[in-house]
Length: 258
Image (cartoon, rainbow, N blue to C red):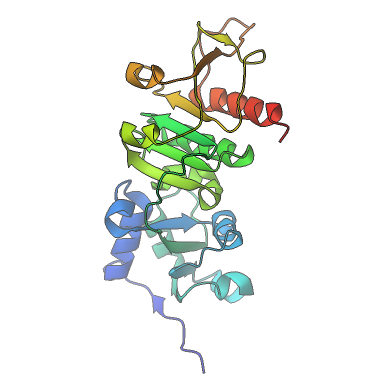
């Protein structure tokens, strides 16, 4: 006989307080070693990649109609009333289901992997968008240098739309991690280097994308094997870093016949 699923109605419940921190505090994932994945899309993305949630949280109104695969996915399941789900979530339109996922140990650098290096990219939306492009175009590893928005922070996780679960993610690393790569480093420049479409695009490689205002740090740019520029016939000064990353990663994938 299965145990009944606990119903929680109090904001003072210690677990509820932990969940709220996990859902809303950008640094809580590091302290707790787990993340809050909210909504059907993120939950199913995790399951598709073989992640088993430590905890599933359902709103009271949704629980009676929750799909079986979600209802039975987690090691433990709880139900909280709808107002409490809104309190925990902090989103304007809270989802009726969320998973709490234990993070695996930090992986080692894979020297020969197609890689994205993020150098102090600070906007969570940009970081999440770049992760989506990396996953879409076959870049399996992401190195986030110190000063980059936390890869597993709530906003980055939402912006990544499930890409996290299929990537090798190294968060808060230093230049020593970049030094372990055995693939060519490529950087972009607004005014220098060969045109992206005509430049050599080795595969595998590591693309480096830098701070929204300052670009790639000089010490890191000096390590690059190639510098390229994205043609902008419309005359704009520069592209958003997430847009530039999507263009570069797609060009690499297409050039490699992927």
